[in-house]
Length: 197
Image 1 (tube, helix red, strand yellow):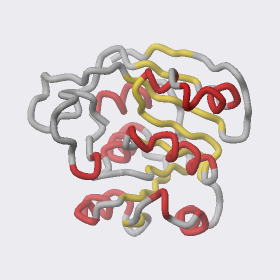
Image 2 (cartoon, helix red, strand yellow; image 1 turned 90 degrees about the vertical axis):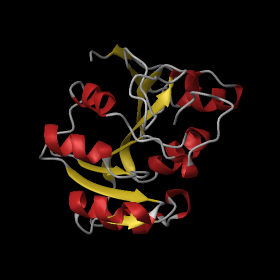
Image 3 (cartoon, one colour; image 1 turned 30 degrees about the horizontal axis):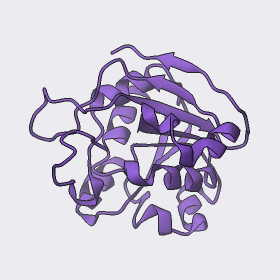
Image 4 (cartoon, helix red, strand yellow; image 1 turned 120 degrees about the horizontal axis):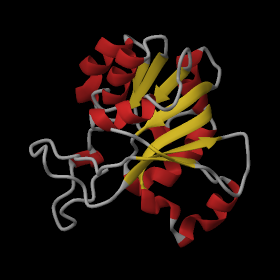
């Protein structure tokens, strides 16, 4: 989710495609070999596409709000996706994409304004949860009590991503990282890793 041009009109449905470099940087430092993964706001499937290229053994499912991405997702995961609002989708329907079981990993770039809600719902369907978020997600009065119990590991991107579709040279106004939680473990601190690009 982009923070560039704060006064500018927002993208419809907060659609800010995840830059390939940001996905590659994370997947070269976080092993998802043979995992069952789901992207709950997949868009055209950038995360899935990069993963399938780098780690073909990963099994993927997807949820996407916008039906215009149906063909893109079918080409990547066949029928293993649902067009629906993830936050209002029944937990069992999501798990049915993985034979009724928890996924090993949620890996996504959520709408930033709903990031906390995506994290909490993802805890219900996966053992590990990883989201591309602004680093200032760590600093919020609203999330203090949550972070004190669910401190993530953070994989910091060394450069700011561009979420714009037209100007590749224009980067976002914020720094980003991949936040990784273990949904089964409560802890008050996590680790910080610095990714290479």
